[in-house]
Length: 317
Length: 173
Image (cartoon, rainbow over all chains, first blue to last red; front, top):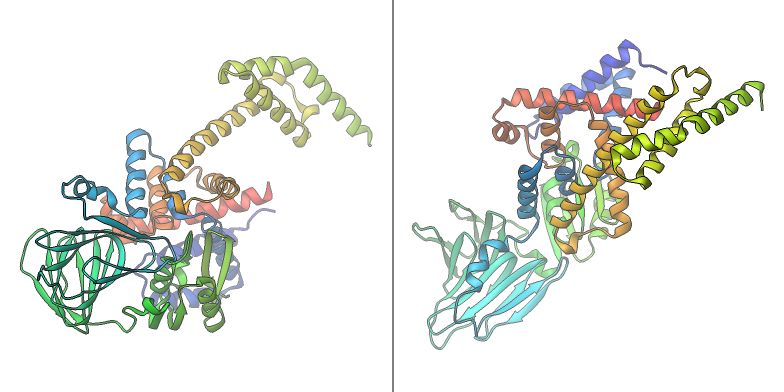
């Protein structure tokens, strides 16, 4: 069998549509144009199926492995690729080694949770810290201050009144959060994070300097390496993980899946073609397979399991 | 078995007896090791048998070495992929590492993808990998590679077309 010129032309057009829809900036007009093209000729549909087959084959491997393996980069640049992959996937602890070597470590202790795990700890002063999935903190109390270092992940802190009136701080790589007698959440990811306040208030400041921003109960603030966002009203789902769920209201599917993937091992991939589908619901995080089943039954999507570690969500076409 | 099949068989047999030792020596010189040379020599004859071409061969040694060269390239490609794959695995956090069985399956899948990507220009391939596997948007890729978003889009379209045609070709083979 060889392909006819018409088939070849349809494949070329399908590839162009595929490229346009996967730009990460595709608009509704692009999708409408694509649907019109698809409906215009059965050959178009056939050609599109072939694109889907290619896409499916690409999706059969985790991107974190495929990118460094397939990249044609000799010697040092290959290692650079690997290093950036490493930074994306590990906890970003590397930059924190300095702190570990500091003196006065006698009161320091480490608390960690694995993927899918959630644990509460009571600190020496009676404050409690609840660690969400895949989280590491170091705690250091001394005569002058109480410091929790959030190395990676997400915590809810409930501070206790300290007879010695030492300030209570949560420090991430980027920011310092000063508690003003309170209950709040801090989440640290690579190069960014957020602070959400449930009771009373906190003051957030960049560790690189600059003025502090006060965040009151019911508000949250995003931060990055270089800047603090403005406080805004808390998302409806803030802290829902304490009770074992994620709440989504008209949330993009890709964002929800990224959130769910924090709670499960391996790769949970969203087909970019369906990433902007809006989904709503309460999804359990202690059993993410159940969450995926709920998505599959409630929305026009299909969950494909290539392996225990590799799950893809795509259109149920 | 038809008469033709008998002829074919005897031709393969002759080819094997006359040239197998030579081919293995030829491969050993290039690989520097007897085991791999023996394997590849065997694979070369398997190709010849599958192609049912033994009767038409006029110059056996150039023909055999042409097939063997292709297999050598495949082997080197496989080794280099294997090395980068192991490096990539080692760079993953331990708790995310797939089991040994899954590692083997994933490597097989990666080799097949690599085959689809063969023949793409390095820039096109880089764009494709950044989009497909690193999940970058076109504006992000454009910034990183210092090209226009339009170029990124065109490279992606080219890569998809290429992969699609390769996939069809491999399915037919």
